[in-house]
Length: 224
Image (cartoon, rainbow, N blue to C red; front, side, top):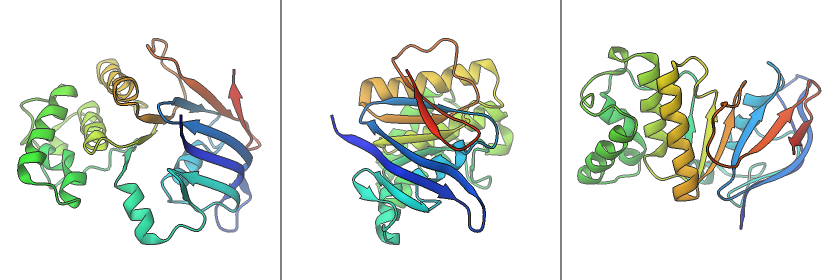
């Protein structure tokens, strides 16, 4: 089983600031489902940003999908991101675009045919229980529905790695359960690696998972 994420003595900080993550060494394998927890301000979202190249490591090493994130060039980083599914807490949908167009954005960017886009949108919107809302706009949806669109978009290109930052933080119970089911199924059926930053691991979770926690000094520990 190959490693998807490998860190060694990884240290992260923002320019001019003190270290947020300190000397982290761990690996995450293909098909792992990982929860990352820790107190507010401990660096959970910072760690996730480094995984999709939004923050370069200060020192140590970080390998994502076999690529060195310290020395990665912009074209290679952009290519890597096309194979990642990223779910943001604030959805990051394009308000001027329909639900369907938001879902297929990664496919559109990559030049897939309209037929492929339509087929994938139909399938994914069915999975997130939004069939019939293809032509609605994000602002016409509830927060839970918007996040379900965000998850559908993240899954649209069958990514090898899903990164989710508090994906159910402000959602109702129904939308939360839909999102957890989707991520479980992606991991279980497609062998997708899933990394979720959260304040709280769901009480009912149907697959085996790993749990990393970050303490108030930026040190990462795996909970066994």
